[in-house]
Amino acid sequence: MSDKPKDSPKKIVIFASGSGTNAENIIKYFQKNDQIEVVALLSNNRSAGALKKAHQLNVKALLFDREAFYESHEVLNVLKDIKPDLIVLAGFLWLLPSNIIRNFPNKIINIHPALLPNYGGKGMYGNRVHEAVIANSEKESGISIHYVNKEYDEGQIIFQKTLPISRQDTPESLAEKIHELEYRHFPEVIEDLLNNQQ
Image 1: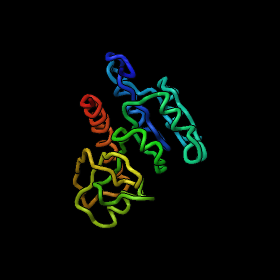
Image 2: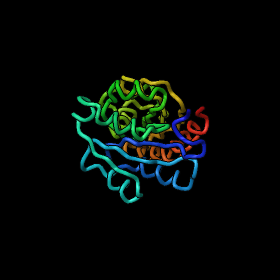
Image 3: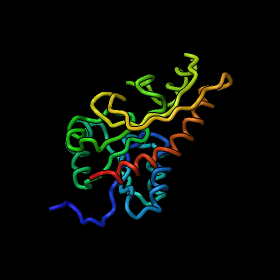
Image 4: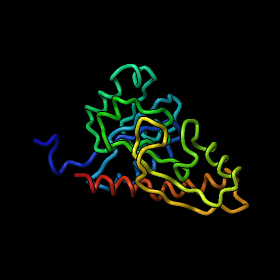
């Protein structure tokens, strides 16, 4: 017997640590979709803009600490209650514990602001990535959407989109271009993954 009726919408849970611009974009994208909905946003950062944005968009927002995440099953149990079809990391900076990865195989994805496997790994996020890319005089950068495993940025890549870097680009201008790619492609990739789920 299936856990839910055939016609109920597929459920997304978002994890975010920061301003929440990607989370906001994803929530708004699916507000007009009756087959898929963002049901909760979880954050490890009390001052994360993502929590405020979720509240404003009528999405349940939950705050958790390191103990609830790593030393107990508190966050895992919340997820088990929700039964998400996809867990989306949108600017979430902690490594997921193995108990969550084990319970949601091939149902957790992340976006990274560079072309993995380059410029990934612990500590490589946000402007640190763009600064490294510019410092190395790279000719292109882009975004990578990948499944999450127990290592930072090492899960199977689902989607990549490249963009050229000009000699005039700074880490800040590159960040703006990367954000545009994220806003355009992340919700579409999420939608494709959910539509193709068995």
